[in-house]
Image (tube, rainbow over all chains, first blue to last red; front, side, top):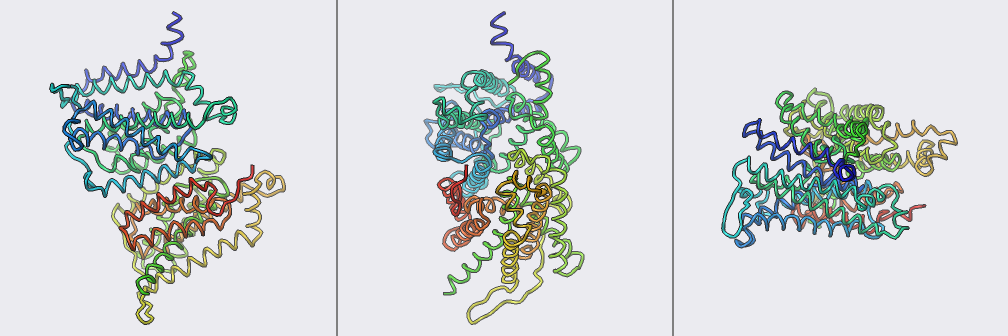
Length: 331
Length: 286
């Protein structure tokens, strides 16, 4: 019972959400399962932005930088463009995570060290970096240039010569589900841990934190890198289901989209950000058929209205109300 | 001599337009701390007003007058419905105006379609002095931009309105206590900033291709100009716009436009990081 109160109860919303997600393939056809795969990856990407923005207080308008790096590294590795020896999904994923995190570490130490760049300045600078990288990838002909890299192989769970390639959407779904669920549950533990408390204090009272002897730079860097690693993982998984890495994955448009998902869902609640991504994508696939080009107009206005009226997010606000009723703190 | 003169004039013409856009951004950012991500779209709408006036057969000058008026009116509506509710949440203004920019961009796509529109130049003449030749209209645009910039400086440095505006920037609470209606001042500054963007769009519409995506290409350099120059003094915009616009325009003489743009963005980020208060900015008072 004590274990239940202390550990499990707060994880319940995440477990229920992912539990119901796992059941969906029993009821829907192949098309929707393949769509679900995209939703899971986008949800993972939204989690990364929620962590760095909602919990770390770093507004990164160029989150697609890390998604794109992960996507390209995975594509290059599994297509055997570096070396045929490295043509392995596990190595690809590891490299994608490492490269995204390493780039974040470089960028972060440049941006945050010393007096550093904060708030609005940081937002503009990260957006500018995303645009620069998109231009760069569009003109880097070795990596496909504007057309991107085609025919990226799907995930291959086999090793040592045995191949278990996930061409079908159903096995791919459960593999992705396991990965995304582990990251999500891991993050909910993390934000309730001592580290999570430190993150909250970066946002609320950084001066006091420094006074107590914590290094703000290290904390910011760590959360920035962790978020980049998750975004990189999402990008790497994305190319395995999409089979295609293009400059749009690293640039302005995707950065905007993820920002909208997370803002509409609720940046300060991981689960809400995750659901925000899924809900927006589902709404898009339904409403863009009904409303056609008006859908983007509606999305823009919804985004605007939710920022002004419900700054905590359209999903996070009701979610926290329910949580309060059941005395669960939802992360 | 001609090899360097033409690029230099091209560069100054780009710099002047960039400064005009950045000035609007700067008034809004410096004064109210509002980051207006929809500024590029307001600039775009200015250009589309010109498209409309031309297709209606009205003279060019009517477009030049209508664009700032209509865009300024739009600015007034935006301020009333959106911005004034989030003055106290500066970071949220980025998000809200970003949503606005998406909506405006898509609105234009729905009305005019995604393809590029063209605006014909009202003056076809070319200025020829010896070996030197340059389109007359571009020179006129430069002249108008320069006088608009000078006019804005005059408004903010020499008039009572400007004095109040600068007082509000420096000490908002004290100014309010002294009886300045800060809300009204914010509103009119926002309108002036947006009207400037609309006018800039209308002015250069004949020299570029007018399409729904054109705003972003000016928004980011505009912001980088402000940050490079320093968000404190108004003159920072001149320095920043000169640095960002001049470098990117002159670099294209030697390297490809894409490489030039990448180089400028990287340089600008370096400057912003190393001198967070901008080239002109002094120490921020605590």
